[in-house]
Length: 276
Ligand code: SF4
Image 1 (cartoon, rainbow, N blue to C red):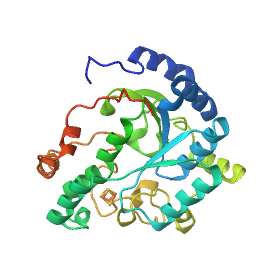
Image 2 (image 1 turned 45 degrees about the vertical axis):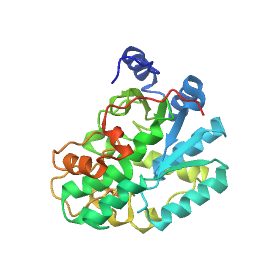
Image 3 (image 1 turned 120 degrees about the vertical axis):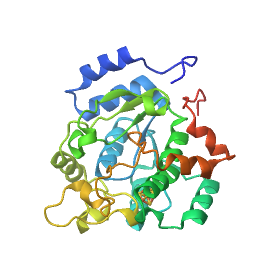
């Protein structure tokens, strides 16, 4: 994190607010976020059940809520159909961020379109190009972002706070209003408010990402077992919510981005001072 720029919130305030909001309902956390950051906060959604709940809740508080998403280019058709339904239902503009086309072309020419099945480092490289770098670019337009992370989803998420400083993204604020919700609470909200959701849930999916890397669960499997199921002992994360460093893919990434404008994204992040 750089010291010469103004950060939207310091660690002390973030810690105090996190304590204050920890037992509050998601709507109260969202109301605080909207009041604190106004148009400088947005919901980052991959249109899983949690993201849809947050869009519905936030829209009821402020119909002009900003929503953004990363379109990796490999999403299931059902996710695109859901994006259309969300747009029609709420009338929100969804800010869609795409991977950098030059980096993508280089990666696919070098490693082919389905590189992720061959090696964990190639899978992380693909996630970096298609998800992590576009997310960094998207967040330059925000002082705070709202995520649908829940503590019970995965071991790496068990300690998340409802409000925290996001050191992976230049010290902006990361807000997770559903941190203490269960999966049952999410689906109860969806049923109560008739919130649109991804049709893949009705086909046995529990966690939905890119089409080639997500499948329906087999009996007895955990939610994240349907993601990158062919990998053994690798993190069930893509790097959007926690930095993943293996030493294996970073060198390849730097080579792919060498001399390219995206290369600057590998350096320290800095929050944008631009206002939309
Ligand atoms: S989930 Fe699969 S297709 Fe999507 S970015 Fe990661 S490796 Fe690439």
